[in-house]
Length: 303
View (tube, rainbow, N blue to C red):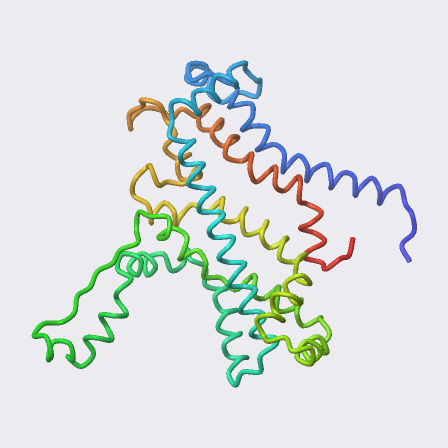
């Protein structure tokens, strides 16, 4: 039993205060810098005192830079990645739990391995595949020289999905985190559900759509928000997969958010900090609105 103690309470409050300062200080630093003008930044450097140029910086970011288009790109990529991951996680989890396949455990293990192999570790391979998605077709057709024997030359198809929304979205779908969570949730459901649905004449698809999908609403909503925020903040792969500013996401665009500057010039940090605030609005609003859904969904709480 833990006894009430003022010293313990004070220590807990002190630790909490230190944690809040540690988390909030970078945010305060970003906000204060965003209120400065570029001229003031060049003269004074980084300052802890707020300025009065925040609205003007926001107007400049919105009207002069490519950030609005890049925000739209981020929205398209985040929605596409989220829906794709949710669809794959739900269907694969349903198959693993309710179908007794011979190699089901092996397939499930292979899916979970993808959690330990994020796309950042495979960026070179992913780039090679995205630059030519016909590589497997070429390999099969040219095996043992079959295509060359028939047509006189090897097959060399080339289909690139780089510099497109598909090229950014598809490689980001390869993760088993959602499958892991939904499999654990579906295993808590009564086994008699499948038997009752079969006795009522429901096939696998109807059972999945009418029974399992409504029951999986809470964890799927939590995963949807989690996947959306994760896709919104992706940096490395969108930077590699898109070579034109018109297809850059907002996070990538922040690294080049300058107005008429040269490469040797000191970056316009007030403008970049303003852009960071604008880019952060969408995930912050989602977290603020759906925080309880995230917690209740991942803990399977009824509240």
